[in-house]
Image (cartoon, rainbow, N blue to C red):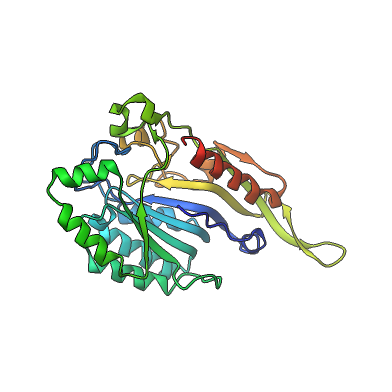
Length: 295
């Protein structure tokens, strides 16, 4: 995932509940069985309308919405529900990203991207605010080859590459977290999952003696920023973005959006920053730590 941090001066002008990255694991279905898959054994479970609404209804601003699985093209009805809910409730979203395995070509998926793109904010740096990448590495190649889908995969990638929303192929440039099927790989190829550090701050806007607008910590009535990555699985469980399906429900089960607010869930795990202007720096540093830890 590319860094998609908007300027702190922008994010602190928006009120309500805000997050840098919201990951929604919309399905546990997948048509592949890659030996490195951190999710582990797939299931038929997809995210319900209730979980979609309980998750999105809490946010006023989402900088990056990462829709993942499983294989997301097997849950296009959930994608459509998410898009329609964002539009209906006027939730501000900076961009939406997806990752596909490339074995399924879907015109309907591309139409959903086109439909959602026109509603996303545009800060002027590029035309599209939605994108998708296609997984390609030795493990995916072995699985595609095992299933005799090599020609179909290549043809799908060529067709997808014609879309303006196509970001490119997504390979592996680091060790894998020891989750799911990756637990069975040679030990030198994996590292233990290291849980993310969460940060939160509360702020209101006021003017100083020079009339300059600034953010002031306000726990009682202020807006809330949290992150850097909040992940919700199909059951509504707030969890780690790279955890296996099994560990999402056990070891990394932090709470459920159907039972309590994301704010309350994250308060149990977050560092509260009393200087709002530090939030972007701290979350950027944590994302860098998380994404480079297993290199």
